[in-house]
Image (cartoon, rainbow, N blue to C red):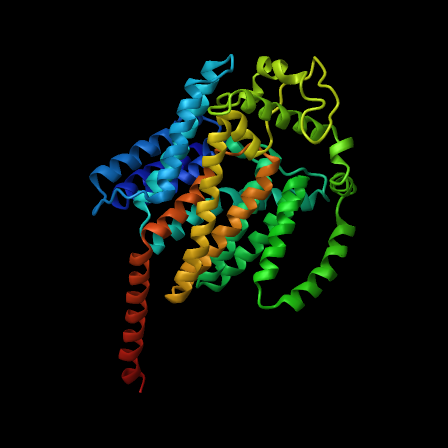
Length: 449
């Protein structure tokens, strides 16, 4: 049954993509984040949905999209530069597994392609809202199911992702932190009362899911998000009193294992084996970059066991934090930090470009928030503000995971870019819609009289 539903969905997606090409990129991001074939059991598990929807979206853009515009903006050029640099670092890689390097580069090309197709195809508010709904329904809807399991098990069920890039619980916590601000935006623009209530419940279940991942980085990110929302709220005192009341109650109801794990944050650097392993990976990533400052070691260089062994002996006294010697039998570990991940993979130049992307997106969002507020385009200013919270969540929780090439982060960059490139058009569309509503109201008044 699931196979038939999936095939039916896919056929409908192809049909509507050729009628409205932006639907293709919305389906693309949903498939990339949801991995629907992992839910099926039969023949549909062999379908290449992601590749097929990419091809269909491309064909729809070429043959069905009207008024094509090939603008990518400064953010698009930065991402193009980063992509080119990853190609150079892949050519100059130092790892002993070339196939893995090029496979990872190919995966990153798909993420970059998603960014550019979203930039080219999303032009109106309805396009952006549909794209955001696709992100929320791919990540947060699954999180709600996991939250119910966590609640019904009395905290015994550990929440994890489903498949693909968010299978790991720490990665999943990052995705949820990034989606919460998007749901807050959807609440602000959704007119249907019960749909707004549903989104509020979904946010609460996502919070439960983040707690249920037992991820320390995820909980830190959630705490910072809560502070950011509180700071921007007009009801600071009532919310502060509510938090002071609810936090002790929530903590008392939390599972003992969760309390024990969160309590290790302060002592992780000296006592937690998982954190010490990450310190080793960060040190080795830095050592790789110091030996190859321009290009780094190539994708997943720190994961290569031979590269790991080559630098393992230099780690104990390297850097500001002393660590135990790495045992000879210790397997290579992922960087578990987006900044050290890029540093080890693509050197200091790659890290500089990556940081420039994050900083430019954040700063332009601030500018756009003020500009849209001045133009009285309330939905756009709220969206820009929400996107910045998502970027903050990514930058903070990203210090705990290897998600530098994350589909969700580049999808958010795409929304930022669309807002920047279509700023004037979106303002005009909003003004035209407002004038239409005003004229409709004026026309109805005599009839009511």
